[in-house]
Length: 205
Image (cartoon, rainbow, N blue to C red; front, side):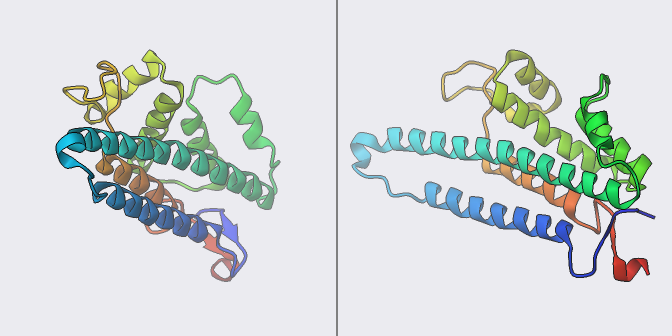
């Protein structure tokens, strides 16, 4: 049974899930407003406006990946340190593992600490979804050819057959469906019925 325990009435995992759901609804509203924005002087600017709004939507979805990856990292690391301490372990254990010279990816290290030290095991498909969000966010932040190649090899649906923006073959082409995938991956992790297992003090007693 998971060693992750919170005081009755204090449920940060439910709060994290609620925040993700709120951000997803907010982004959906923003995308809808972009897609339904009026086109002025359609004869003169119709094609240009369609391209411009597409670029704005693409930029918004890029920020979704970067922000969701950052928020998830911050929240899970805070949770790890807190729960290691509650379990009688050194709260700095995660920092030692994180900074250590280890060939495992950061996500795999985190998965192993959760499983080995807190007995919190999560289905592999949820880790795979998180890895996708992290890989795409890293590629967007660095724009390095290597990180973009990693994404193209693992997740080809992020790349268009024709680059409408004129940046070459290694430019991610992000659509609302990609934002949905990002939010779904983060929500699945925080969903107690699917992802991170935990209990409250009332349940533990």
